Image 1 (cartoon, rainbow, N blue to C red):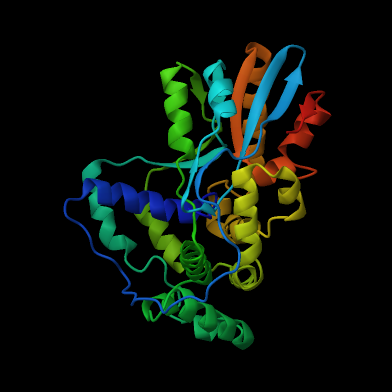
Image 2: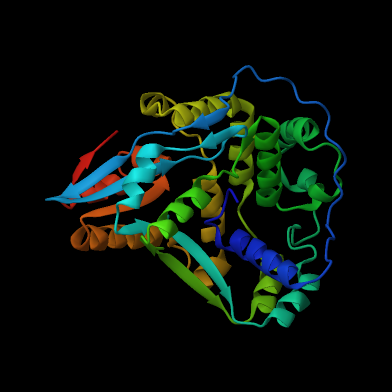
Length: 341
């Protein structure tokens, strides 16, 4: 999920996945989407086959080292990631720190999860029954229609969705049809290496406990959300950044960090997450400061691991490693020595 840090999008998909896992033979979909028309060819040729990705960042204090791998999404669909450097470093480490996360835990049993399914109907829709045409500025809506025709095709159902959900669906379809994917083999490979070498896994993050998810779903359906900016940013990115997105994917695959620095990510996540975190329901659950909480959790785990282990391994989105004020800047300001690949 591209907007995974947004708690209500995460809530929707976690409840749906959980309920559908417990349900038997439940294969219904809310919207019917016809086959998409042919997509114009894109110039950038994507790499294929086995690729190593970039080298590792290194944070150290004394003789204790934290090796950090920077990940990227999306990546070339026909690429398989494998890095012997990463395999060796992780196998010899004492701890593996996974990316910071926001988790949703439902305090209900499996049967109750199944019973939630009817309440999920229409959860993507605008709360007032309006369509995108009615709430999106005319010029922006015209641009949406052009991209929708190109990447989604005819779909009447999506016209009733909130802008943030419609934008997300459009983005995912455009990425897939551009030869890219968010589904890579990286996490399974890392988990397998850690397990085979008995490397302790640490998952810094925060968990939100939901005692009455049905009530939260009901509130969410009626909750206003300022998500036009998210919609606009996504449209602009798909109009202007798809070629650069493919170039970034290639640069990551072959380990060209210099090229990645020259291709700053036009990611829409920050704006889209802000639309959710600034909503009243997020504040009600104390979730308005989740991005900072995630960074604080990861930094605390990294410092703890550096203090007790000679060698530790971690993964972070590469955008965070390239930011001048990102996670590495925090460690540097705390006195750790940072070396780049």
